[in-house]
Image (cartoon, rainbow, N blue to C red; front, side):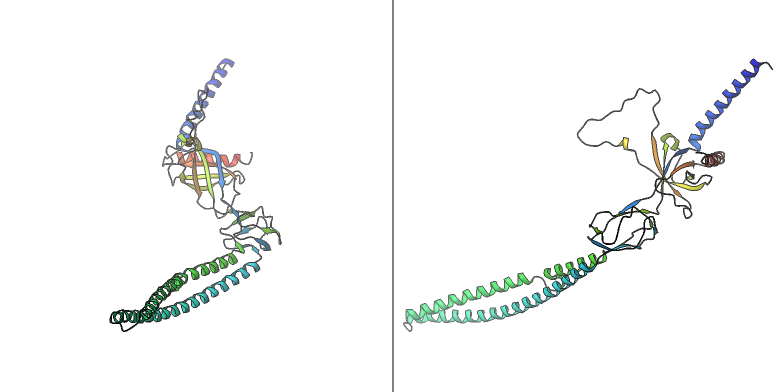
Length: 353
């Protein structure tokens, strides 16, 4: 074989290999898509106290793994115990005030009955005097005195009724519906809750980070003092949108973490994002901003999907860890074996880069 013939053969082989690889990647992008743009996301909770005060105890250390309900730190509870005691005293005082008002109400009602009796008697004396004055049996002065007494009795009756109404308004509803008792009971409940909140506990299991607390340091309500990286894993992967044509929830996937080369973890597709930032229009009163490009072939849009590891009990990568995801959608007889080969190849390559 001449050199020219060998060169021609090599060119043909190279072209054949290129065409085969091109066809392979086109088919693979549909039936076994892969992306290195995957990342582990673990929710990070910013832990903040719900009351203010000096730190009495720090029960954990930085980067320590904790379980839900574990004590993180304790705020000096003494001021809150005193506040609870004062709230309980105020509740007791409110009950005593209600008892006093109830006694005053009973006395006022008795006074009303007495005023009604006097008013009835004075009205009868006035009526009798008005009949006798026409007969000349009594003097005009006596009649005027009886009329004044009747008017005074009626005024006292109105004042007694008004006094009862005033006491009833001040006393309010009876029993548990009483406003004064409800306010005092609410203050007691709030003081109890504040006392409970002096012990700050973990709401979720996870690993602590950026812990800077020291005994004696003053913490402020609502101000974060440490971060809790939870154990809940959300594996997100960004694929070209055309690569997801045949992908649906529940499809099998294989994951290779950059920090764990040579190991392949099984996963499955959980969900797909409804859109991306570029697909969101803000109603801010401005006209649409249309992007322009002079490229003949523009970059493909990537869509984010979420995956869940089938068994994450023996792995807890840090939040933000990078990974490569191999999807195995559908039931194509050749796609799954070739997809697993791609995943195995990537797991070996991760030893190098």
